[in-house]
Length: 568
Image (cartoon, rainbow, N blue to C red; front, side, top):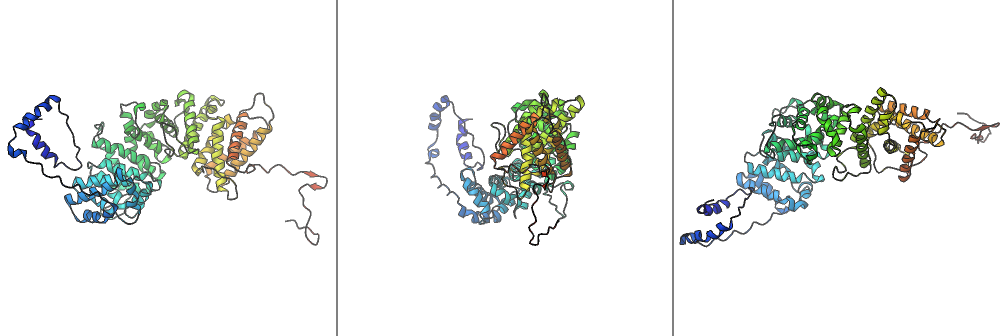
């Protein structure tokens, strides 16, 4: 940089855009020593005293919001952008305490003017509005208002429009929508966003301007290897993060499965050059594998992944043994991969998925891998059920129960029984006791499916064969619990069939000792005691009636005043 240009540079810095990044250069010592010589050459006119600095603007407060909103709505250009900047400053990282009052207090409507700023052609106001909406979308309380409240159509519509127009702020809009989609109640309405200029109600798949088609276009139009950290690559990355959340709903998965999105996320994994061990949280690969996992668990979108060759692409990742390995393992189970494809005889798969189920029930995560809430219990239980079915199929082909033995650890069996019985207790109004984690109906259904598939290993006979009162009691209680579950209103026909089939086989096995079942029953009983649940809830009443020469011992004499008996 020539010294004669330093004065101009200093002047230019005063006119830099407020959001521009200031880059400072460090001069070498030799250059610093020569600087005074350059100053001596300056004429007297150039050595004028510096103009007094303008007084710093007063930081905005919540009381300024009505005036700022009015300026944003009525003014244009720099004046509107300046007001938007002040709104952003009110909810920036240093003013987190303002975020909920700005959206939820009912005193202000900052969402409508911010959404309006998203439609501006000028980048300044649009960029600042994106930043503000991102910050406001973080608190849980705000998500419901922004995604489901009166201004939701404008907010989601404005964000979608910026993505559709491929603006520089597209990635910020994807992040904002992803923040909102962490509210599960919102994910269906977000993906259903399908505006029409004609006012007609168009289904998302039929409308090129719907959020679904906009996201599909963003993924399909991205270059095969977008430059890292470029606007295009960031847009694709955070779009996959948004789709990861949206795919948690079966209704949404059905829509996504009919687009090119499954093919795109599989290609993201196929084309990456980074090994899975180097994938960072929230990377494109991390998000893409999550999308595959969430879509794979739903039958309505599974076929699209199969057609895209997902199993072949993610199968090698199973051997990683970390978060990515866990995700790949569950996805392969969902996609019907044969038991032989799971590494080390399926032992790592059985261990990691059963540990995940336990952690979810106990409301905890795993250090360095996942936090509580990242995975749903119905996802983990379905993975275990599908692994059990794959192992059972392998056993039928080879004979014996060597493969299901891998999954039928007593702790895992007890956990599946616990999930089913907790649902049964929650469904029975007169049942005492409760669980700290009440499972959903899908989780219980998958747990029953896992128990049924593992029956050969669960009912292994003792060596040598012998009678066992403990096994008799275990068979009686567990079979009764499964039959009670089958009679609960809302249980699917498939689950009823699985429960009754398992109950029948378990009850028939009571004539001899079943060590694995005994230990599993004992662990399940210990859990119920800790939770204060009634221990006689599933005790079978089919014991018969004791009699002597006078008749049934529980026969009660008639109590009618005339001494007569009425048999009802």
